[in-house]
Amino acid sequence: MLAISRMKAFISSAPHVSKTTPFALLSSASSSKSFSFSPPTLFQKPNIFLPKRSIFSPQNVRCLQMEAESHQRSGEIHVIVGPMFAGKTTTLLRKVQSERGNGRNVAIIKSIKDTRYGLDSIVTHDGVKLPCWPLKDLSSFKQKFTPEAYDKLDVIGIDEAQFFEDLYDFCSEAADHDGKKVIVAGLDGDYLRRSFGSVLDIIPLADSVTKLTARCELCGKRAFFTLRKTEELQTELIGGPDVYMPVCRQHYVGGQVAIEAARVVLESQVQCAS
Ligand SMILES: [Zn+2]
Image (cartoon, rainbow, N blue to C red; front, side, top):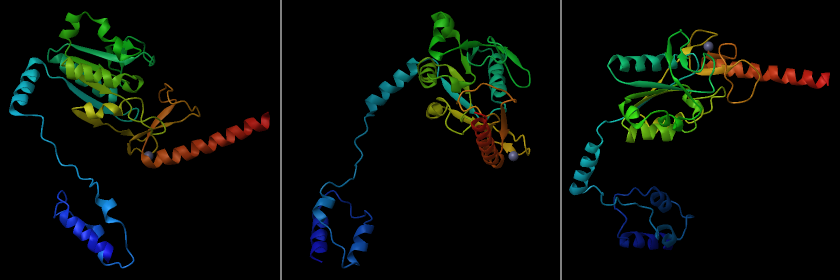
């Protein structure tokens, strides 16, 4: 009781503790005789952060507005994610073609790692084909243009974005500083549903995020995940329907169990043979 009365005295004299602060700890302490602690050490440094004065004084706000107006064009970032065969590339190309139809200058970048349909073009699973820039990393993109040509560029599409490690820096610079509209398509997760590359890192930068779904190859329901049908374990394994299939949650979980069981059988056969 002595400890509690000392504590109450301390609270009533503490200038920074609000009277409206909910003290659940206090109410439970007062109903328990065996409860004791040292109040001064608990409350010596109250963990309460009072808001500091905003740095945006009316004068600073005017400066900010002038700075914003000095950037002639406002950039945008739109992210399209989903499993394989969800139509991400098709959606990207449709958006880029629509921009081109509106008289805007567009460019499409794809990873040099994806050679499935040739390096200098991008082809959707339903056969639409557009020329593109095959690049190892995005930082080399700007160097392909003269400053004047780059300045005239309005829209940049990026396909298979999970393969670009410098995605965050590129998108930030292109949209925030260069005023470009950047449309990004890529896998949000790999075949083990782990975050793939830097695609998820750019979500905080984005104006919009669209998660597309495919059709489960086994039951026809909506598919959110990509199941690898082979036993390779590396994260990056380029392939089409021979290697991957889109699946619903139920068939993803069941499929992983079946693949793991098959792998164990294969490994035991190899050990027996050797
Ligand atoms: Zn299914």
